[in-house]
Amino acid sequence: MAHVVVGLSGGVDSAVAALLLKQHGHQVTGLFMKNWEEDDSVGHCTAEEDLKVVRAVCEILAIPLQTINFSSEYWDRVFQYFLDELRAGRTPNPDVLCNKEIKFNAFLDHAMALGADRIATGHYAQIQSTNDYYQLIRGADPNKDQTYFLYTLGQRELAKSLFPVGHLTKPAVRALARDAGLPNYDRKDSTGICFIGERDFRDFLKRYLPAQPGEMRTLAGEFKGRHEGVMYYTIGQRQGLGIGGEGLPWYVVDKDIDRNILYVEQGENHPALFNSALLASQLHWVAGHPPSVPLNCAAKVRYRQADQPCAIDELRGGIADVRFHAPQRAVTPGQSVVFYDGRVCLGGGIIDRRLNDDGHSGKIATDPWPPEQRSQ
Image 1 (tube, helix red, strand yellow):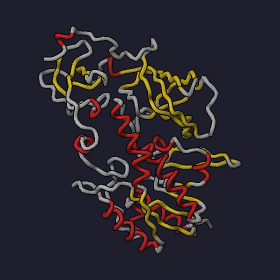
Image 2 (cartoon, rainbow, N blue to C red; image 1 turned 120 degrees about the vertical axis):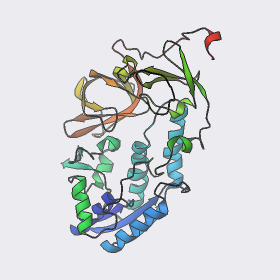
Image 3 (spheres, rainbow, N blue to C red; image 1 turned 30 degrees about the vertical axis):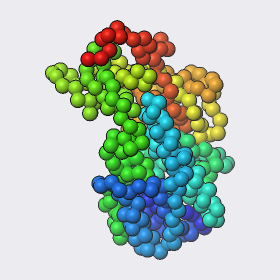
Image 4 (spheres, rainbow, N blue to C red; image 1 turned 120 degrees about the horizontal axis):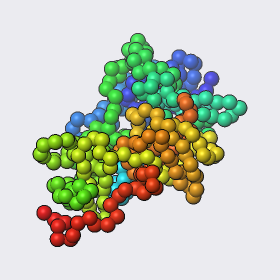
């Protein structure tokens, strides 16, 4: 049997991953990663609380536990990129980069140095192999499938990884944990920033990105109010705009970083919220090489989205031209577009630009109102 190092977070999924590996006769070692130094906010699970739960799980399972601090790696490889993208007006997904740089890079290398044959995590995903060729397969629970966050994994990472709960549903995982007497069988799932926890997002970011208030305007130039800083908002956002009055609610439809303007329009189905195409860069293909194009497949531009039929028309200079069969709402630069062929995750990339059928983004290129009307 293999020596498997399991990344234990304090959550029920990774705990059951360790449980199943132990039941299958593997030599299991638990590893707790601390990747953020600050634990001073109220209302989120601190590293100390997580470690206490992990110790209890390891004691019940009778497996050794090691701890490691990857805070420096997390800051340099994940959080700094996160801040840089926000400054540039994009909306990054730290969970994607966290998996790439920490869980399946720093953690994988550390586990191999410990003499492990494999690593394991509590991700809801599956791995299928044929003749040393590995595919990333959706988790069996459609409500928990996490392949969207794992598309940057390649052949090396998949060859060394196990996802023991990928074939299970979340209720089944909790039932296994309860039957085994694990203390976290009913612990709430974490929904905060990867390794940082559940905090007030805007207040947290203000520590690193000082507020730069500016104007909110419609695409036609009508002044609608003031914003706290365009980096705090994302395309399609409704909450926190503070625009009063009657009629349909207001939504963020675009951002102009250079002029510090947040563009807003009324109605969740406003045409400015929809795009039929996008350009994506920083492409990664699970197979290790790009597919032949044009490629008809499905894609997601956000985690909870249903599969959207699309065609990848071009792969030129590391850029993918993705055309959707139907316009997509709130395509957001900085987020990931992830491609699928049925149950198989093909890979993905970072959204650079959102396009319309004419190939233009629709973003305001020139000032639509005279300078004397720009402040009210």
